[in-house]
Length: 127
Image 1 (cartoon, rainbow, N blue to C red):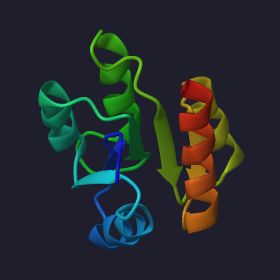
Image 2: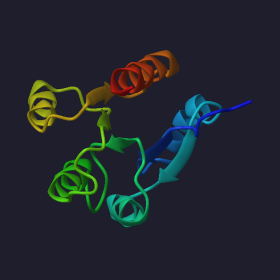
Image 3: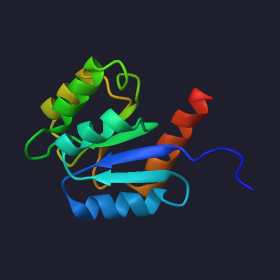
Image 4: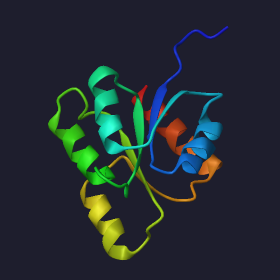
């Protein structure tokens, strides 16, 4: 019998295949929400607070860094851990991302074992 509520994870990525794959990694362990834009993410975050956000770095419209900046400006969301996900691995992009100080920086394609380990470590550290 489950004694505690499952952790909530918000995945934000404009690629529906990425959403589908990552959701498949997590759905049996966590409560998973999938959104396809930064604008949708901010709307969701105004109504619900997930335990972690997996955020695509590059999206059309409002990109990951802009969503992250807005989350940091809002008292309700500034403490939510963010894992940036990106397919871009050039040194400047990685440095730019790390300067924003996200919880994690993951390179796509994200492996299930690596993602599950990072999430497990995060939640263990928080408890």
